[in-house]
Image (cartoon, rainbow, N blue to C red):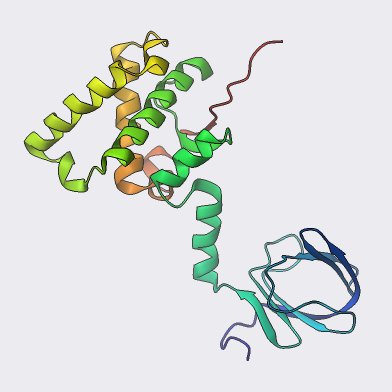
Length: 213
């Protein structure tokens, strides 16, 4: 019924349940409140025993059982992976989707010359990823003569892109944008953000670049 060999849990009683459009707000006899998502296979009710898995107050709840019925559960290893995906994105496609939605995305500082300079680089990065994802580029395309051919096609796509054309890029910005795109595409955002070689260059960027009023 419960996961074996996982002792990082707390058992509490539900003293209050408030339904909402996005699930239920439940209050425990410990005084803390918790939100149960609408896709829960168990409808929370007053008097139920809630078992929560995690490191305690202030930490993420990685598992929830209601009267012994599993709502969701992640082991410590699964929760670390879940956390990284939530933070950085699962892959290049998700990174680009967050960018297109105007959300902040984690990346690596490539120019070191300020936010505006980095913005141009990461617009190139996003449009390069878009072209590669649409084109179905494979890892094999990044080797030998195939890499040269890919770069030729990529540059042709970028130079024909009105968004890129309006930036007036330097060669260094263009190269840096394609470079970080290659790392994101081949390794994924989680891997590059965990690389100790660039741990001091973590930044966040967004398609919605701030403008002066």
